[in-house]
Length: 324
Image 1: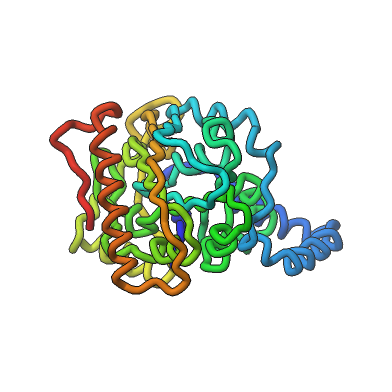
Image 2: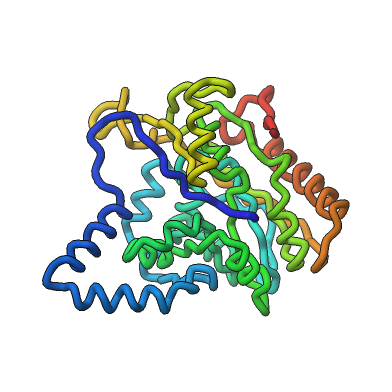
């Protein structure tokens, strides 16, 4: 099924502050085991009643999406959202985001916040970044990520968005998924897409327009431990990915006060270019031939988008996408 996964990325040994998900889980457990056990228990009951929300458009907060911290996040790299064609708000859209990168920073900055001006560039459209369902089972953290516009990546969630009456919904999918994050390193242009056709089928079933999106600079943010195909490191990573559904890239970048080693991403510009829409006829039961034809069209448009913009954003003319 089409989905975007938020990888569990494993940094090299170093002092690392706890992640937001760990903090949220710790706070919930402390409350449950302490004097706040009753509110925590009531919240747990509410979680059960609210379990379908991540697959039904989530619960976004315009206030959270406009937090000042996201402007600092944008400016750190910096991140820029580039519009190449108008998008009719009466339609629903499926954005194919490429490449996945280590942490999908461009997708988060552009589609889960208003720091880069999505609402102004594409009025009438509501973006939803799809994320592994596992993360929506974590108390408190689930509500935090939904407030930015993240939703579950399961089939029901995609169908809910793309089948929305009246249009205006955008499902953003990092097509390469967890395996592609293992290819993310400076200079890499490898996309795992040739066998990825679930998102094509979903677009056909709902008549949602397909939009290729390429995020230049996404792979420049971290180095990874060498993991060529066939190596022991890669074999272990792929085995764990199959068992857990989560990618485990071994990454490192810079520190706070020095640039040679640490967990902060490098300050490299990210330009996320949104291509022109591919209009798709609604086909509730698409044939394999129809899926293959649309997939070929999508690949052609994606390559064209990359080739037309690569020299503007620092990619040498002789470099091309490697589709696998």
